[in-house]
Length: 64
Image (cartoon, rainbow, N blue to C red):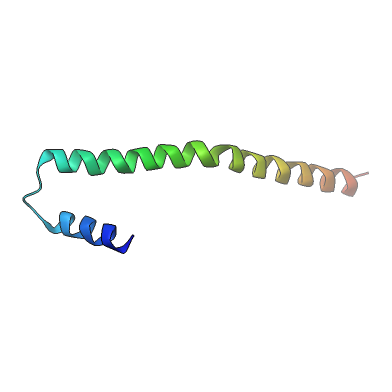
């Protein structure tokens, strides 16, 4: 992992990088972002749904 980070830093510092390298790095980050969103979206929705249910229970118990 450290080697990958070093390569990315060197690539970023290199001003002679061609368009293909930029496209590859951009596409890798885009795939990681979309994949992370697709993987985490259901988990985040469940978390907010459970929190909402608990708040509704507390609210109902408070104003009975």
